[in-house]
Image (cartoon, rainbow, N blue to C red):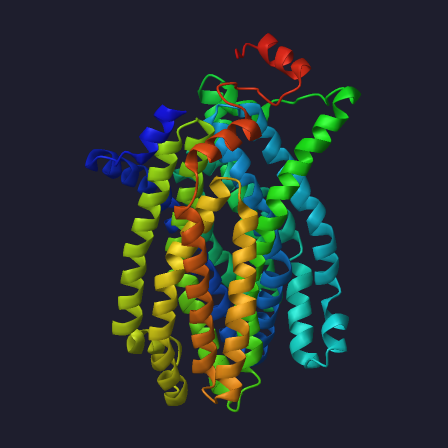
Length: 498
């Protein structure tokens, strides 16, 4: 114990820092590229909707916002709960636990997709009950009904991506997303314009692209299985018989662990995603709603683009911290967290410079309206300051997930965005009359409160204690630590050694 504490207090060498930086960027680069590809795919959808007409654009925008709030944010948040278990399980070489976590997460997401799908199918009567425009609602409900199969694709894709990322397999994730997006462009154009399916074609092309990505990932996994000797990492492909009834309590306990990690992760993701929809709703209540809503759309596109780097850093930090804690190396876990935060601060500075120096050119990409352009140029530097806080905050959330503490991130997100940011946005925007600019200052206040709180938690972390917690959670130096003994014997009979 004394030696471990001394190692934690020892300053890392420059070689160690550079080595960790390389490992983080090796994980983060393909993830950032994949996020950028996903952003371009969404932009293609918006452009095609705009070509169809203003009604289709309005209905499509409503549908995309609704599906993000009610569906994709929930599935993405629930899936991130497995990051803690998979990251630490691969670090401790507990391959069976990683495989079981993947399967359980897929089942959990498929189960959660049922009520979400029912809501999407019945969107029209729900929206009409809130006195929404009937024509816009009709277009939005059509898109949501046809996009329902995408819930199945995402229920499989999200866990598979996290599993492979935790395992250190990142480039196939990027290439599968890239290839499917290349095909997404002609598929969308053919369905939407040549076959004259309109919004129907856009919705169909969306889930076709995600199923193509899923197909490519599965092909990669089965290809690597057939061309390499099977190792414990590939237990995902092995049909495992159900554990005996005597282990029902153990199974329930492990499901409980997964849910305790997934639900706070889901809350943390949803709270942040929903804030931007909250800001859009408030924008529609300002004195000049047309200008405010148009600027809000540009701001959301801007933040979505800038979010690709924080997302990649967050995933990298979660993987690295989880792997090192699972392997019983708290010093390296601390180094990974420190390097990730340092890299986040550097990248956020470039985001700030981009929003300040390129705000006019970026605004003209979306609009030629002078009023919208003027407001956009005013608020983009504020959004850049938000990014200065958002990048290290998002990265720190990944560190918390890697150390199996997503509940702390959810709590911080709640009070930062809804106890600090939301009231201040209302006061500045409506009471003080700052309009949309005041809403952006509310977002900035939320981001500052969030990053200060979460960095305080990170730098006060007892990494030795977190390593012990990881050992309790996934086992240490025991490949099948949480497995039932019957399953271990079956694996050994097939040629796998402990």
